[in-house]
Length: 416
Ligand SMILES: Cc1ncc(COP(=O)(O)O)c(C=O)c1O
Image (cartoon, protein in one colour):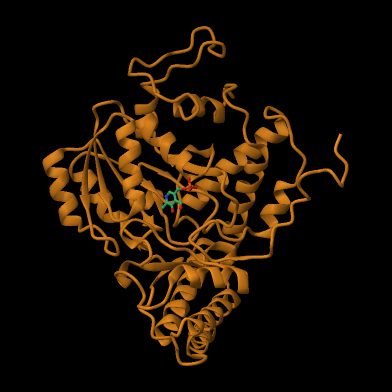
């Protein structure tokens, strides 16, 4: 038995931080409170009612009537994998526009699903030229175009309407990864005609990582159900099996997951109770604010952050026309040690900002203004701290220029 003296580790006591990286960002306290609610059995009618509520709430967040809108237990990539492994049959042609790390992730997962993957790449910091995507679609005749909406690694957002229009002309399905954008940018699944989509909680939805809301239409559901093979042991007499190839994952098998989230309540996995509470609360918070107001809040923060950084003489990374409003890339000035600066922000100011990877490693920082963390005071605090840190590195921005300019940008919006 351990006593307080001999217990090797103490109570959890995370240091106070302001999470302003590209995610996870600070969770809304309401979400943390929801997670502290008592557990229920997964087939308790009270719990299945919460499951149904979560489905309805995410239909509204995704702006869709898709019946099949539910949660995958796991981080955002669990949602990506569930859709791709259930939709892609070995040998299917998949086209992936790549404009950052997460396009590479879609490529990698599609390959693991046995797809014949074709890619069209843009330089990091740009979006992919729709004409190049169209050209590739004409040449490769993909069954699926899988495209990231907003790539957090580069801060760019690819306009999805173009992708859907191309897919329709070439009779392809469209899947998009909206992990970085849902709850921070307009994501209009039905209006745009996206066939399947997934996200995560830890960015603009103000929750912890660990639940991935997904949605897909009947065309996708039909394709997945053609591969339905319910595992022995829970299969019921007379159940109709699909004649397509077995989906290569049990956990992420959307055919079984539809049965679990649907009327038959097939006993698949044990739903992650506390994460469902969290996801449900995240959606309620987003809808309470209203999607339009939420998008506007992220845009205001982006304008203020960009203006503040530029007033400090810093270069904002990438094509600003296609920058996501919830994350801003900053070119690390010559002679400034980027990691030293991040370390000082974290340890002297308690502020976390992000670095980047691949071709941008050591070249840019990324500041997130997402969900609950997307607040005026956070923008101002962060700019102030960054100015002080840069000064220590010999980079002298005009004192107060960043914070004053950002504040002026906020005042303009508030007066409008
Ligand atoms: C655009 C995008 N897609 C996918 C992911 C993967 O999410 P997770 O780390 O939650 O699995 C991330 C995470 O940063 C992301 O930004």
